[in-house]
Length: 264
Image (cartoon, rainbow, N blue to C red; front, side, top):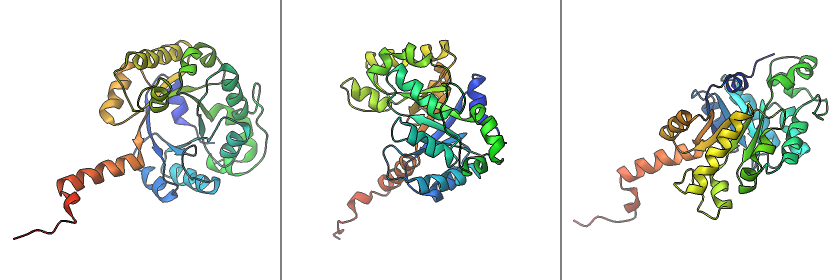
């Protein structure tokens, strides 16, 4: 059975860098899977990506040696079970704001205590290049469970959330976190409330043996967060990267003037 090297790196305190996939397109996933990121997260919370698209994306990602993760639409057993059963190597669970919600996410992802994941399917084993029996025996050692801290309630309850056994990493969603504070969504901010919250999550995570993670806009921000002690770093998304480069080219060619007719 293949090893989830991302989970291993995080357990050893090492950084692991990935990105987000927001296009419902396995071809894009396959191309991004060969860039060199440790992991790629298939976005199912805010996109039209279906389970059929997700399973093909997982296969496309893992074929390039990259770990396929998924952000589930919401924290419930059905969402978590179905993406794991079709081959995701880990889940990122949005808006986990209490200990009870964290416990529910862990239970849905693990087979044995305190887990309640039901046994069935074939695609999960294929994704890990093994047979079903081996997968059932070893999946709890390989599946990455990440809860998101993206609301002020999660900041207030950080200790009770991150002390839940079975959580591998906590991932800060800066856009939603700033929004919950009444500020404009962004990847980063100089607002003291935001800076203090980010530091609190990082310190609380490390104290509880949980890898701290955060979403950033670019490589410079990623390097800065790693220096601060963050481990699980997501850089933008495939769409963000595509549009950033396209806008750069459009600006260089002054394409906004394309409808104007030159007068000589």
